[in-house]
Length: 300
Image (cartoon, rainbow, N blue to C red):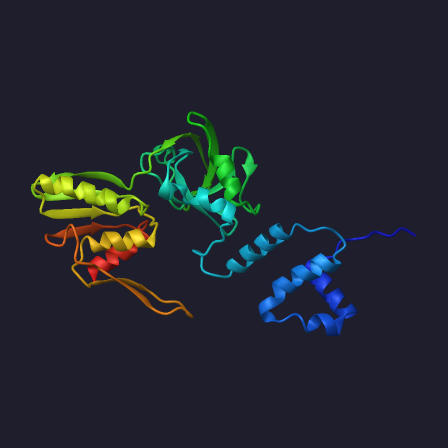
């Protein structure tokens, strides 16, 4: 007779161990500590060695799938690379992205970058990179960065799913140095009317805006068009800082409140570069997060 040993799945493991040692183990497992208890059981009694970091990361991602679509898990080793479009410079294809439901979703194309030039849009979903399928493969942020980053002048081909298209769209992108400025344009649009376009809320956004505004005011503008179209957001603190440029002292900008966290309010201060004059804010369906905070505060 031939026997075949099959490694049990984790739920089977837990059940088997509880049957063997019901009193001792069941007392240790409660609702708050199930995952920790499971890892201890695996470490103590599982037949093979398990990569506990990978298992833990996978468990966290599975839990967050039941939360809202804007909640995502970013391991510590990936955080610097993910934040780079908001704090530094790099060479690549010029997008920001989230891995949502095991699919790479473009949240923003960087203005003037390689992806925008070939026609990639926010909301596009990357299905293939070169000939490799990357949707439904449990790809991590670090893996995406490794595949899309590269030296200036090198090329990468991506296959995109776009809502409304029956077939995948294929784009070949030439990597380049990515300009990471928040203020994409600033000029006198008409007599006494200035125009400033902000593409993201990064570390330098408020300082860039102040510099652009001062130059326009020196040219005699009294009214302003603030363009936040296509701006997918960024740092909350920079949204508060930008709103403060338009709102007078002690005006409420935004408040945050959690299910268990106390309400925290942020107010405008006495200093603001454009508290007088007419202001128009332009937004579209891609204006999100920090853009919505600024727009809502000004509107209120």
